[in-house]
Length: 243
Image: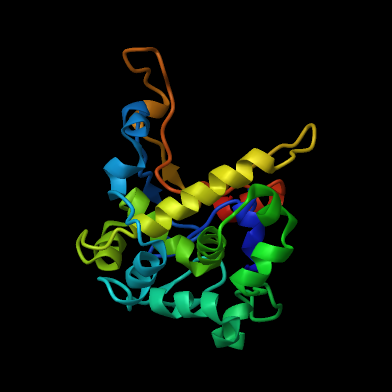
């Protein structure tokens, strides 16, 4: 699991970027409403397949978009889905340069085999994560967060189209497995009293109309389609926000 983003899986990171949306970019927020929330994940990406291992492998190594290169906005790693999937199976395949921060001065990505994490991670054991769920968390907490969130948000549109082959490969099984892992982890996480979490918006962002204008039921706000990263470190959130 990536050192910089094991933190993200448990609520760290404070932002996240890549795929054409840099850390200090100006962009219109891609967000949904309460109706979108009730429509559920299946309405967004379709049903997962029952052959989980085969489906996850094909989504990353055979289907549309599996060889599309992208660069993460946080650590400047250039990679592609089939490469990242291979790294989850054998961490030694991760190049040394992909383990460093943006300045290439410090190792921020520490990888371990999914089988090892499943047996040694206290969170994984207490949550009862399956091997597939551990692997999905490893993928997300590495560079693949760029792909999964672009698919869920359908933003940036150019990335959504190239990652999915114009909607052919929505990583439905992998993302569904990841959601299952997040739900299980949330059930066993112990949050300290008084914990405050911050979110860096990734640049000057235009909030959706629903954030300020009540709907027919008087509700204001928005639904985040993607996995929302937060951090307990305010300075990290400010860095991601571009302030």
